[in-house]
Length: 381
Image (cartoon, rainbow, N blue to C red; front, side, top):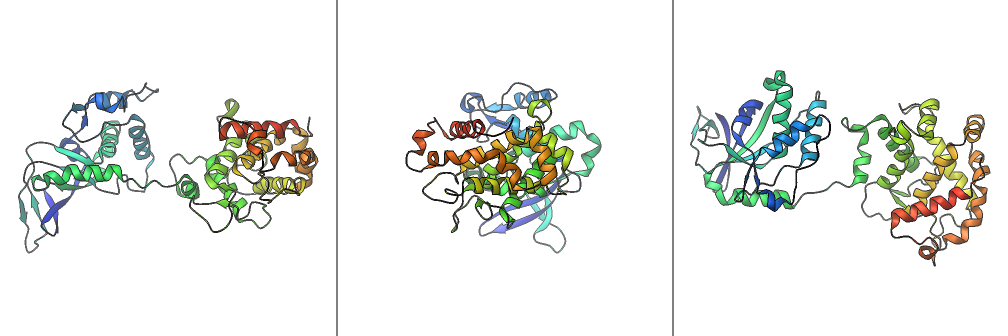
């Protein structure tokens, strides 16, 4: 097979491109014995996913294998990505393969690095890429017409790097760099698989709240999850999750009141003035709670309180009279008329004793308690 030999100091490895079926015939799916995995990779079948579970259960298990067992969810997500990939590459990075045999390399023509690499007599062991190849195996079975259209880049290590193969696996699987959820929200517009119109819309709202000069949250949202020299009140990912909750199409068996309101008045194509709903709402909150807004002695501008405020907006929009008033005025006064009673809650948000006044077992419950108190004082209905 044609290969590119890459030499580094005293070692070398090979870069090869395989057709999908060719690489699948040359690899060996292997996982450590099930007892060491604690059940990893096994789960109840979802409709249409029996073939994934069957494939995972059929993988050879060995006490001597260094490769981990396959995770059902990860294989499913990769398969879904392959099936939704159009113009973009399916497997843009190489998988890492190993054979304990020593392969021979014969340079071609006048090139010392390009030539013919011998095939091992036994299948390759996968150092990295087992989930990608498992997804590919299932994909070509479902879409055999695409077999010749998919090439997989592979880096091959042979018997000269026996100790290095296991060491490389440990390094790869113990030093993952995790992208913060806030960073993923920032990239939502560039994502195709899994980024529904509602999700992209929610990311747009968060971005507008951060950037718009009229927004009381301007520059107060931690966009990328890291440290900042400026004071930040809430992570972008946390705010995004709450706004998406308002328009989650699965809510109430097909979208709740906020979802229907946005779909009717604005749609999901990011046109119109949908962000104004949130900007004017937070301007109303700032006016109603003026004495404690952006006051470090109070806990109103913290993630738990802001998340509760977003949930309260959902309750306000659920009121038909509020929606009617908004369509007529489109101003902060529409919301101020409903939330003026929140002014009486200002003392409750004093930093001193805040966690005792809103006692909870954790942040999730505390958001729910604060939200309930906001709702109780709404001037609607």
